[in-house]
Length: 412
Image (cartoon, rainbow, N blue to C red; front, side, top):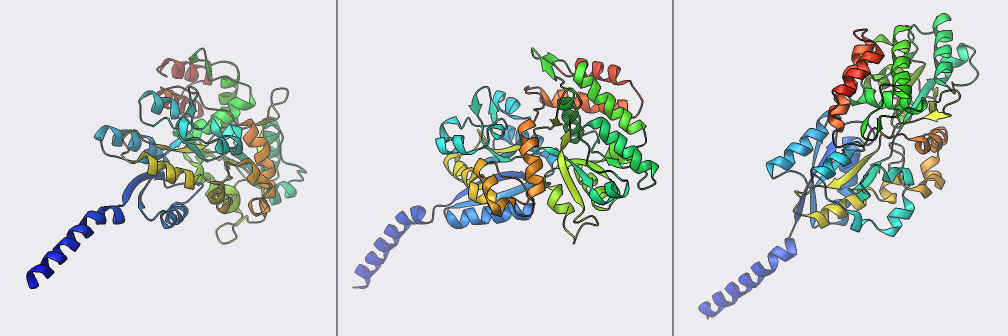
């Protein structure tokens, strides 16, 4: 009797064991994000928790690095043979990532609903050579933020519509003793400076490349750098701008120490938070200005996407996660941090309420987004331009000579 009972128990255990892997099979995804602007680490964790709750058979291990480490961490992980299933990537990297087979071509996974629903400009974030390498996630450009109270005290009726007007208004504010250095930029020797430079290149109608070769050393590219140097040497720009990243700009603006600042979407709601900001309720935002006779407004494409790496052993689950994170429902729920990629979201009062001014600026800015150059050698080009900007600001080189050197050192 005992023997037969043991056999029965053993049989049951074996049957149970054979079913166990299927019943409790769990896929672990490794995902790499940035610890910076737009969605915070807490927001990404909350979104991910909602995904795991809806998909209990999938777990997601999250890793966060500063923006400056995102590219290298992604590339190094590929080389090690381990690495990530899902990575956040900047609009400037698909050319390199596609060429070096870092990201999977997901064109066949993009549905008609996605194609029709997502704003056309957002798709440029994840495309290269006619293929899709992920889903756009953070739709962003830089806007001109201004302190309404300071402009009012200076007798300025409306924010500037051109970059020359911006300089004139800043001079009025300085001359009236309201602020010593009214303008704040993120011109540290980093990608942040390239984003500000690109905004100005777009205003001046410049080209980064022509026929695959550098073209920024003349025309609008040269005019853009000359404007940066003039703003810096005029004493209207905060002299620490040459070391500032976007978060430094935000802090200066929130402290009431800048009348004008160029920054990403996320600053609007943060600067309007009375718990954190001295200028809450006084924050104005408009599209970045244009140049008389050349442009009405200017904007850089600062968007980011989520993609699947070629090293991933779980591409289907990785895509499921990406589809959830970029879905309209998820994006609308976090619209106060980053504006949705979905066109119809802008008709949703839950998205627009309390940020009507930002939405109004976004409609112009997002339509005017200008890309940084699309090239597999973007990293070399960016490094060369960052150096040219620093040398010009510090007076170590003329804008002409600095950009000529950058063109020679760009690897193109």
